[in-house]
Length: 113
Length: 115
Image (cartoon, rainbow over all chains, first blue to last red; front, side, top):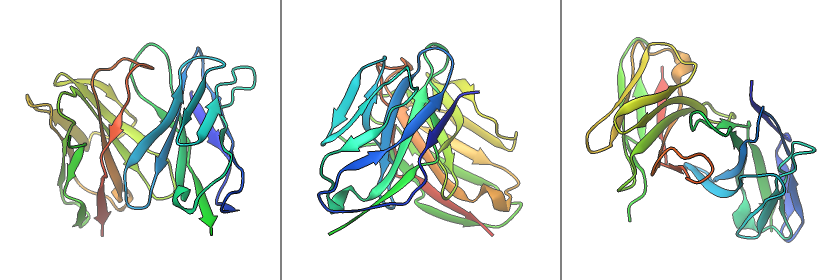
């Protein structure tokens, strides 16, 4: 079945450091890929998405490129802030059929001043 | 505009009891989905409704049921609660069901604790 694998957390960084959170997926066909962020005590918020190979999603300084050859969708940010501390979830939705996402386990990011 | 709202925020129940969770989608959204998020895990899909009809069901026992009302709000019901049902229950709404062109907006969730 479909699956999403994220790097284990927590990822601990100092403010202004470079961030990479790895995400790889297994799915048939051509899924759409998403990154969601969950701040403490809140629901999930869509951060960015990409719907086809080589697309780059970007938002709030975060970027991720849909790499079909490596089945990856790694999240990057050039300079993190303390306010970026949250849990980040990678997810996929298969094309066609029902609109049911498959989520990864989440990666906790902690940014220190 | 108001986002997705869920009630109650927190809930404590004992084993064997029944619980009803409520969700109001963003105005104009016709699709509602329910997810269970156990601590330390990603959300797991439970149900999806569109135009008051069930359009998807995840791998959950029959103790879980849901419905969508004419105003597109939704209820999730869980019978005979087990300790393992303790989780954050998330509701998400979207305009339609178009994959890749539509976005799901999540509510803040209901934290259910089963003792």
